[in-house]
Image (cartoon, rainbow, N blue to C red; front, top):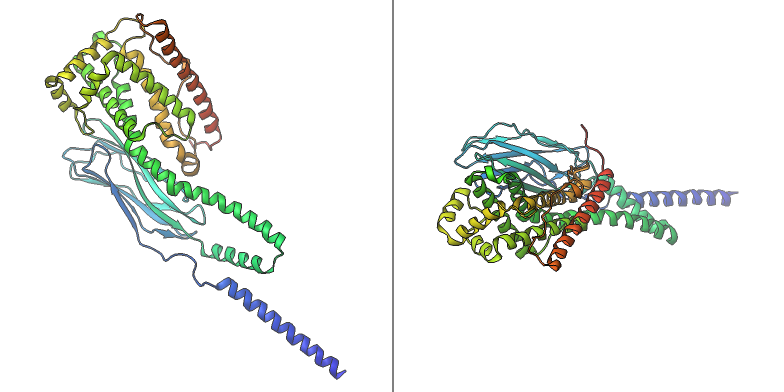
Length: 437
């Protein structure tokens, strides 16, 4: 009996030792290392200027670069008018803040006098996820004293979101699984974790690589091109007989500016890079038809010689001076006037301007599309009409049968591409949450 009691006590002691050992091991697995996340960093501050208004400084301030779930940081947007003229209006078009609850800063619609500044109220950024590093981007529009609109993007970040408790639990579970589970379950759970991590890694890769490059491409090329396309659309003249000489000169200036920007884009980038291949096809075909029509009416050599007087900062007044002193520009003005006054159906400049509309809609939409699902989380606007509702140029009566066939074939390919692209975008927008009224 004494021996049995001794064995019982030894068993209890061994069980207690094992229990304490397991508990100690689990505690060590859970608490080591003592701190998982990076140290809290300071504020983030960046500044930039919109194209064409280098003395207008947009500044974006974020109080903290590292936050935890349940905490928040604050975003402040400030515009300092260093120009010598009044800024009529500054608008915040949208904010891309992945990882945070969407809330856009508000700017008073008041003019900003020269030398003055305007600032948004602080916007509280609350994490909508438990982890990750996310850049904050604000797209804004500035209307200057001449009613010219300038669009630009200011980007700050990344802002890191850390949940130490969740990270510690995940690490603890991974350690337990690595020690105590059978190889089959370890492989199964490892596969699940790998898939989960792969999805997150893919999203992180998009934010870290593709989107910053796309932002640069959009800011340097797409937005300036869209501005020129909109300017041509705004100044196009249907009734040329009642148009003033200044109206036609302004239209020539905006069209030549579009040719200049597209020339730079083609030399540096080669072609459009969109998320949608159909969008690329629509923009490229519309531009091809417009450019071929321009070369035919104005002459490629004359256009090339005229572009030598263009630069990204040229003003309309300076352009008018060149127009009166530069021989190639004088020649170009005469040809452009004749193009506008052409009486043959489908051969005047106005018959080409719906191509500008189609191109503007596709380029602007695709410049924003990569951010819809993960950043905006709402459907974007898309106002492209069916292809049959647009006006297209016609072949010249003097064209050969082969040349007429080529031109008509390009138009048919564009119409088919427009309808296909419209259907694709409509289905895509239907998959996104609708914007609240």
